[in-house]
Length: 401
Image (tube, rainbow, N blue to C red; front, top):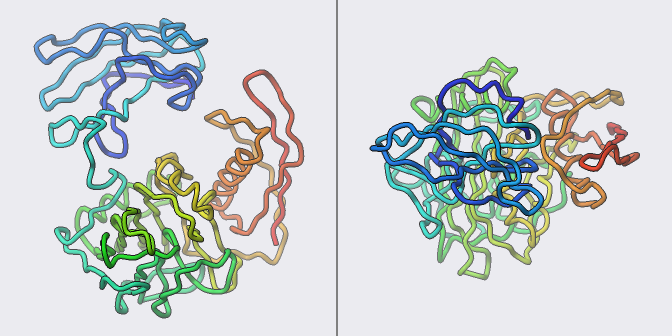
């Protein structure tokens, strides 16, 4: 990213996942914050009594913490233990202002790296204090049938759902299946993290549905952010949470994630939110599948137990730990699709590594699916051409089954 492309105007407060943060005031590793040279505040933060102060801004590059001495900015400390910044355009590209994830302010208290949060800020409210219904602490157990508002899932409408302890939601019947099959298969299923989970010793599986209140307001705003071209208002939200649940039979592991179903008018969406995910040697998979298997998706890396801890940092909507999908309409896959695509990547990856290529292709696929193409479209890398020292060119081919 390059903040020279932003039209800065006025004062800004920084948030990450809805939680107040501030700029780092010590050196930040180069190639951090989604850019080449991350910008940090040189001179420290003021107190409330200091009023408005002017601070130097440094960009780390070529192993020099202040290789780029960018334009100065004004900073002010506010009552309530947060700061505001009068950002201006930096001296060039690629330089970006950083926000410091190590210090998060909640309820006027600054949490240090040693502070444990109950859940990431992307999580919707959950737990018994929020009125959740708690699943029985039974190995391979499930909720009873949950009657719900109509939810369209790729052309089929359901008015009931089951929350299964092993990390997935099913519509027609409860499921104790703990070994995931490789998508595509032959059932309508939403897998937050499908594996052999065990809530008998530690962890809670719970759920709640909403038809009014602040959760609907939040869901509406999230969908506007993730799908900005849709006129949408949430009328129903269903939140299922697996909070610090262990793997079987390793009871000292903790894994936390959420599946949020959102609907309104003729639209339906799924949000998958990930907190701390323990690594495992068990088979795992996250995503969704359908009866006819023409619509399915596997979150990249979610089918490898040794890499699923990265789920809390991955996303298809630029919100670390969140994946968002529109799921109301079945796609017509009777014809092949030919499409031209031009896009600009906002971060840098070494595309000579096959793992990075797969991540980029999956992100492009998600953009295509969000704009109406069938989810079984296949993208293949036809050619990789280095255009200049800091970027590469991609030539893609695609096909639909």
